[in-house]
Image 1 (cartoon, rainbow, N blue to C red):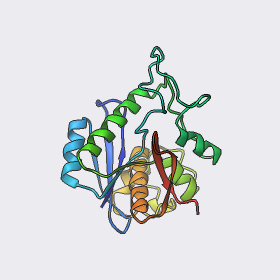
Image 2: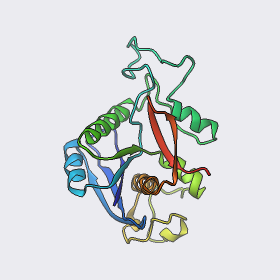
Image 3: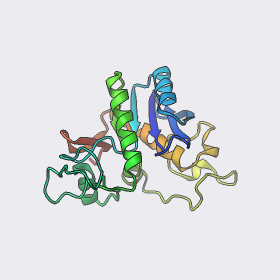
Image 4: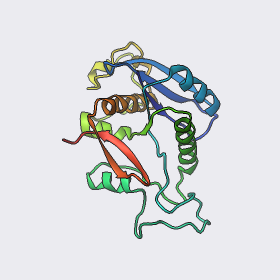
Length: 208
């Protein structure tokens, strides 16, 4: 099975894990608040691949994202990670991982989770749910943040829906599922990678 993770910046709020089976169909959803809870959950589930839909590395040359630190970008003129710049060149909109980012707490947490799970022997990749939607599905999200009872999940062209859980999914759960789906595609060698291997790669659905 494959897992996808959507992380919140603060442990006060629930983050989400979605499982997808070998047929790339969503089977289960889980929530957790603390990293300790997540590590126990992943150890119990033991997915083949876990996709994290948030940054798992810093730009080359930076040791942190603090504005008052003396660390410097290794590539002059870069405004983010190589992977993010490459996606922008493909017209895939994204947030850049930059010094002073308002998302730095999320980024720090994501990097710590990635490093901890990888060092524990889990296969972990970085995904970008918006890229998966843009490349494969090209769909406009509902103006509502949650699927309602009056909406059928089959109105949305996501092949992993239909497990019976999707009627109560919010956007965070959908993003976790997109990361899990990307992990499944990666397992089947149906993905490409963008970025610099020394900095960190993002796995996206194959463009070929």
